Length: 102
Image (tube, rainbow, N blue to C red):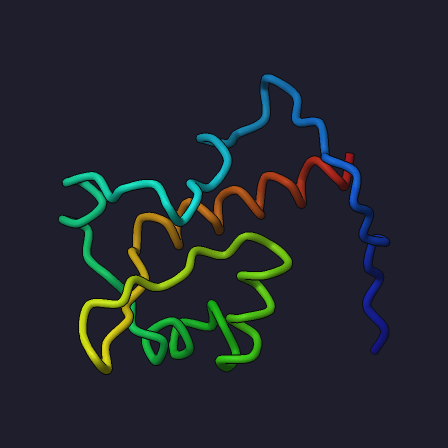
């Protein structure tokens, strides 16, 4: 089965004022708010189980190409991603998708 995809461009996409979008995802260097910390964090395996990412390569590609939030190093072997930023990114990508379909 073939899937139709839109060609990707480097041009910025203009969003209309009535688009259902909070705002663009925060940059990774923005400090976390207390509310974001209270919502918790996803491990890579949790995001994989939820279908947000397929594997580490997919996660890295989404980070580099589509602005997916990067994890925060909290220990030698720990780097969870804030749930609030993942959810915001998903809402943002959904709004972009609806905008491109118009």
